[in-house]
Image 1 (cartoon, helix red, strand yellow):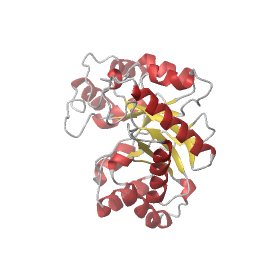
Image 2 (tube, one colour; image 1 turned 90 degrees about the vertical axis):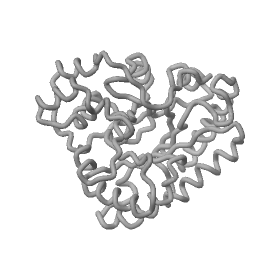
Image 3 (cartoon, helix red, strand yellow; image 1 turned 30 degrees about the vertical axis):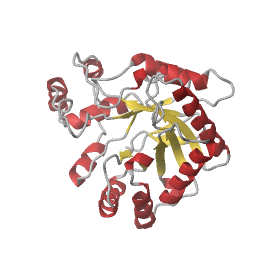
Length: 290
């Protein structure tokens, strides 16, 4: 499962990544990344709020040589949430702290984690000011070579338009959003593809706190027909549409299950999955963010 996508920055991003949300602890991070690298994952997704960047950096320092890998063989993504208190210097300091924690000279992709700013109400007009300030810093750091690509997460079309339609801003390379058969937006996907923005999915399997998506009877029926698990069908559904996926797991069995996607869902079943009647959102909703 080594398919890649060419970003608008000219760099290749693996379609399949390893999510690390809620995976913490020096030993735990080392063990799961050991399993993941051995299984074939080459893209690691983290964020400042995950509080595991330093442990990932330490683990990679040991594990890359173990698997005869170099830094350039690995794609690393991190993210930050804008804050009402952030100056441009604050944002730059946070990114440089990520670089230090991850023990790398550059980060492949750095995202604005949320269109709103911490410390502000979602409807506060200052959210726009803070995300634009943050974006300005990220694109400047990209020009300096500290970031290879910059992007966003949880952005609606109207948030993306602020950057795409203004010649003073660069178009984001990526938009990472909640995306699965019960929560997907064709207008957002169409817009991103028209503007050369790579759409990347999180919560492809729902959440660890709810198994409703993984136990959906339609998903289960298609999985049985294909001789696969519901998890694999959910991941393959997005992957087959050239949408990035970031499954997270801590057990060897699940880490290996999530990368075993070398099969094809027939067109008629893809259509059924895309038209599930049940709608469900598991994560934060950016629609109210000004």
